Length: 469
Image 1 (cartoon, rainbow, N blue to C red):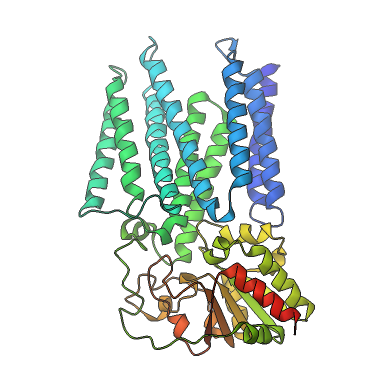
Image 2: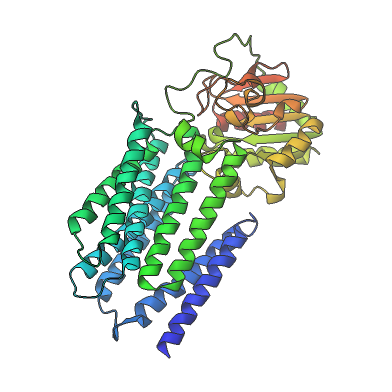
């Protein structure tokens, strides 16, 4: 009876994971989807703690189990509540790394268990152990490096021939793992295990270090899929259906998201991982150093007037908006313009910000209506009929060099065609390049005017000016 109840718990957990993941595709239901999946996970965890049996024995070390749950729950809750929206990408990367570390630890424990117990060793079992160890270790080390790069603790690092070194390390890891699996029925040597662990961690570090900041959303998504696969390996080892299902869902979703983001950047995954797009030292400027001419500025009062008397205004949010924590005052500006009869919408690029969906989450926090968020294709259809585009801290995703300059590192990347609008107002702190490290041709176009300053302060001043009109 207990086994059937546990199976039911796992079934409920698996179904809620699928439902929750499906609901995440719709911003209006994303929060509810998260809660449904979390409820299913709670049921699965409770069922495992109280109903799981191995060799006729239930779990008995409840002190350690609940101690870990309480400590981890407190840390996770505090981290989630205190994290700033600008720091959300690195928190996601850090938490993803913890998942990879857990999968690697499961493999270490299982290897130690079969190596020190006189049982018949199944090579397939050993294969899953090493798959979880390698993938989990790479995910952990790579996620920690990604976390460090996103919050500025690590810079871009590369040396001559690093990709060759990476390939050699990976081949050694695969060959060593294959050797242990092939000879597992004769000998299980723990020195091989920890050697492979060390090389996997080293590979994870070298794998992410040279990749530039502009590619971090893709890398985070890819590492997330690694963690899912590693977790699925743990599900195989423990014959835990809900762990297996959850891992497969995360792995598949992360892989699909990585592919979609690469398409959004018009680049292959190989190019992302080897090209080091956006890495320091690779920036040459979109126009190869040619004179772009002069940019022009617009005053706050003039910007307020043209936006107030426009029929349609499109807002393009970028990382600068997140840095300034200006999402709430941006929503205030939107509501004020709407009261004047202006049709206001938001144009969202797939790789805007520092992680997938960063801008969507940012605006959702400010209670921006979901039906006002337009994806890139929808927004590009509406730019020609837009009177004013307000670009808030976005850079590379609106750079025309992606369409005109074959020497640019972002050439071929689909962008938001803001220049098709009648007027473009770009808010930035300065003329410094974006994450790709290249100059933006848009800033020098005839229809573009610059509005310098901190996004939050500029938007607050715009709101004040519009109130006085």
